[in-house]
Length: 380
Image 1: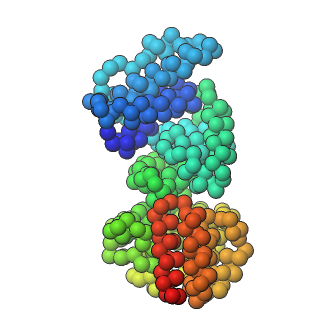
Image 2: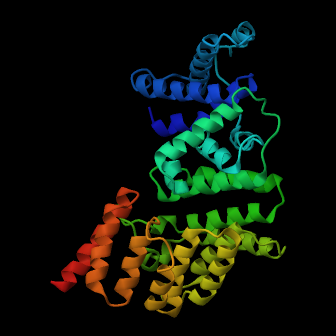
Image 3: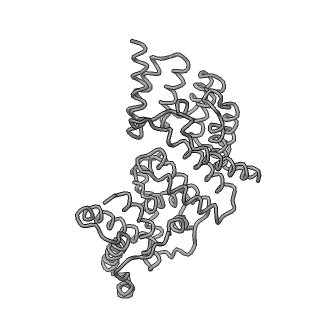
């Protein structure tokens, strides 16, 4: 049985349990147990109704956990509410669950971490990488979030800003990571944009569409990464680009700039350039300046250093890079690229090899290794 199918059913199964009165933390654990059981048994005996099977198994696991806790006074009532056998109606609870996870009792960072783990299906390691913190730290944060919401009634949904942050991180993991969640994040953001008139919701949707439009060109036939400057722009999805630009222009016209609109503006400038050499890097630097003021993010400043290197020359880019912490993810790869642009091939080769050893995923590691090998071949 396809594990992607199992993963895709998680939000709706979790929603069934929450609607039937299960506290979120115990329900999430029960659903995870059911998913593990599905992976184990479905290949030999796949059910006719996968969602119904998962609901039944997860509910029984939830009841088992509830019965084990003597403080649960409603356990007999919960037994009476066990879902009946047969097909379970298809209801998409995913976006609702995103809001419920952004509970007012949680800090925004804890709400994001909990949602990514419980609904987004990301591992603790993947969430920790997105937050630039150790895996153990993120595991503790998620555990605290579960304890905080354990037993609370989810009748106070969280705010839009937290949900947008979650959707953004889910999209990034799908676009850059090992789990393909990008299309799901776009689907949910479209739903959100249809019911909430907010320029940052539109900005996030535009950003996703503009990045997704380039997806077909990001990998070669052998699966290797293709840098933006080397991509076949004929493979970019012009319909998605046009849609993203239109959404962005309408959002910017409202004069309520936010970080997602600024990021989308940068993506639109890349999409607008017929060739890499015609990219308006000066304007991109200006947008990164706006974005840095909005976020004060070290990753934004790292990307800005690349843009400065393109607009004002590699030495200007290296000067901007020197003001940042060299422990930042991809710092070494950026340094390698700028040193290569500056003609320091030996230094660039060494830095590419170092960056490859610390790469976040296999595709990135292979790309950086090839860059180092290419420069070493030129020197020999």
